[in-house]
Image (cartoon, rainbow, N blue to C red; front, side, top):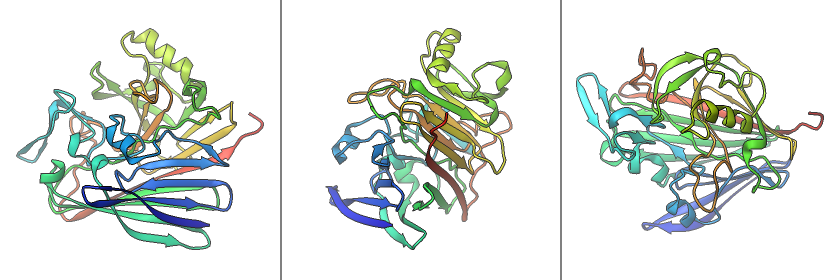
Length: 338
């Protein structure tokens, strides 16, 4: 197993580093300190995610390619949150709402390499970021750790630890665009997707989650393996103004795998397990050049998006001087008899 670190670029007089993790069985992951970005995942030399070769590509992009999103991922209705009697106004970067914590979010910050993991069983890196309300818009001085680890069983393990000096909201995710085709110019519409979920979040035409609903009531379920392209067409037939998915599924809580993504073209399967209660499926509906619509699919494991405004407020605050943890594991394999 190997771990290498190299200097990618200099940004505002700070080094942006590239860390490459390689196991002994054909899986290699490259991450950047900027945005804690997952730049590349190669499974037996086949690229599995969309990415840029240079830092400039990420700086110029509006698609959050591969980055950690936080302090709060997704859309926050009307661009404010309330904690007890205090109202915190946020940047309304998707007016009148807040998307992915605005321009001050962690996707635009440079982390520090603070820990390296090397053993016979796994290699990995711990990235650390210190932030304040002045820097990210949410209450509290914060300490965030992002851990990326790779083992010899083909599992890429991601996790986070977040601490705040004040009561605040935290809901982190990774925004990698997966494409398991051999030819990355082929759309992910040919991918099969399965999600262990019985409920989803009803979403407005402004893509704001507003309530829980039973999947059986809307047909947009992946409880059995379904072709993404077929489901995109079904969604278009039901909602003519929405060609694609930007939908949140509430995961069944069990010790089993929560999602499976499969490409018949490559016969590569991605299985995902997570501690998070929700996965948002985003089919790259607005991907911009050099990418194209539906070239990648994001499977964003996270806490409830807009959860502070949903009935019952399922997104709870992180109490002052406490930690919040979460993890998501990605397992890559070949399925030859599907």
